[in-house]
Image (cartoon, rainbow, N blue to C red):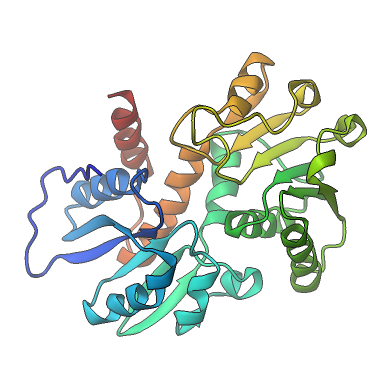
Length: 292
């Protein structure tokens, strides 16, 4: 994995941040986080760290041992990591998912910035108002928990959830009903996700799964069902997915995961540094990298 450090000099005083994931070699976070540190002349560095599930506990303990300022947490650790933390912010407590850890004087506090990053990208980059909209979500993992929680706070009308494993979708539904008192949720069996009747009133389609990261990944929702959707959001960011290609073909407004990635990363940056994140610089760094 290539890590871009523009003009940084690693010293004994350098504060270390990074990302725990498995796999993690596709991560673009080091590019824009290091660009932001460099732009503000902060003595920080951000590195990708591959952490297998069986090593997660030790990895989290290492944050304290090496006195790192904190890390991001990505697939597949966003829910499991909670048991190794000392404290959670309100959103993480409610949604039972963490994607950012901050080491505060030896105590590890967990945050979830995915949901807020998603909403900010949808509003600022997508120019899309989600209030009173009907939303269809593919996936029931950590990102889906965070995004659903944020959507409910923004007062969506209804949420439809489909997932390969029905039980995981059911758990997400029950969690949202219990923690956020949101009852207008329907689970769609994965095999029935392309039932035409479902798609008559869907406004926003969101893919929160990793399907689309690989070139031969299938299109999970048939193109004919996307025709009336107002907006398509795919959180995959390493390539243009078949879902986004379909949205573009149908001239439907859409965003890939880069927008959400930058905004959630900007919130993490501010948690670690106490400084306002230079979002434009972060976007520029990642766009320049993708063009290469």
